[in-house]
Length: 405
Image (tube, rainbow, N blue to C red):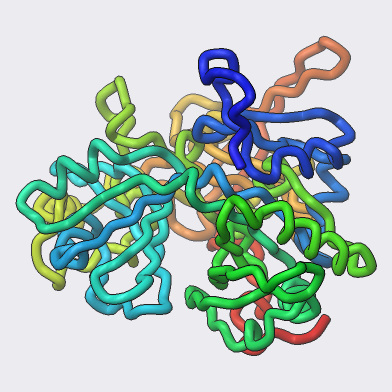
């Protein structure tokens, strides 16, 4: 449960129901804020935690993910007007990734929509959107309520995640397809079966699941998973290891790869779904939605910018590097938003916003990278080739049922 031992002004960051378990395993005492909560950045080492994602199973505290219950006779009509995707196709037991925009077609945020039952949905986002949602709901018979504190969540990701869930008693979980969810009970290691909503979703681009539960059951679920996972190389992970995996998967992170149009201060820094490689989420044929007219106009004339994947020469990540059309550095072409060395791909990867004219697959740009070696700065201009995303997409992420690794 949330810690209530001190008034909120003495504890500006809330603690998740898993906080005490996480702190006990945190060797580096490295925490960061996320949506008003304190969460682990690194437990033991980024490399160890990263390879748990790709080679075994990892456990990540997902509780700070902002969650809204959207219910009422107009819930579907409201969501279909709000978001760019046609959610009429979303049936109970399914999850959809979607985005929503302002009237100018600029991205407000992205998130996942769970269809729990007819006329009841759960919207999960990285940032709080209650004001925008309620303003957009005027005229609809719909109730919107934030339920972040009412639901604890864990992300169990990695090739052995399905086998681990079966080992704790979640029989039938192997039948879940990607972007499906179901209700299960966890009997293993618990006095009484614990009800769970399990979705085959995640932020790693790998086989994985997300577990949603009552905060009162959070530590019980954590303990059961860790006990069964102790002989299966299960490892809790922090945000830094997860960030490497999400870049490999080509996933976008708010405030890193784009800034919500609700927060931008300077003209021209807003981005549309078409510029961020999310055109597949925009369904112009479903009828009106917020931003449709502006996005239709942009689709007709073509976006001025485009988010691309880059394969950067060398081994030094191109963090925040400016990009140029030639090695001379005379003409700027864009900038890197996310970068990492990929231990699995053995490549220096980056996501970048570039001029549309430079976004074709196979195009070569030049990244201006600065390195600090013992307080001495070095500047390197290295080639960066535009490549397809995702950078890493194992077949196991979609296999149903998953193999018992």
